[in-house]
Length: 157
Image (cartoon, rainbow, N blue to C red; front, side):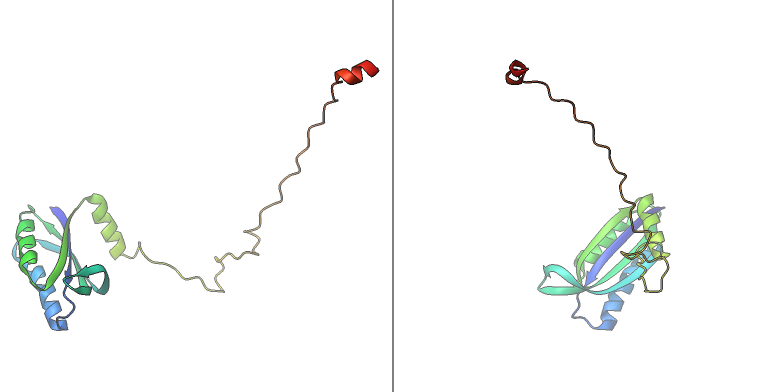
């Protein structure tokens, strides 16, 4: 089985039902071609980095799927190109690291940020003893060598 991920942006001016219908169209297309859908994410409305087709935002969807041969990819991309509801799309073949990353992200192992509270014992503050560093040990200065006599001083002696 080969693993793929397709991310596409749907035009935001469509109604909510039409946006869901567009995403369902591609899920059904993949199921009809005997692909197993691993994950489907509706990422929601997001701001675009630059305007595309005079739109500044779009509704993002991501489908991760497995295909026995990968022959569905040209058919899927042709369908995405022809669909006027789709602003942009990107299809990526996943290697074993990409599959593991996506699985970890779905399981909550990646991307979670814990907020620290005042009562949290793990929280370190500037005045906590764990943060203080010991003072450096004093360094002995080398003894100064006796100055060598200069020729002027040597004559005086």
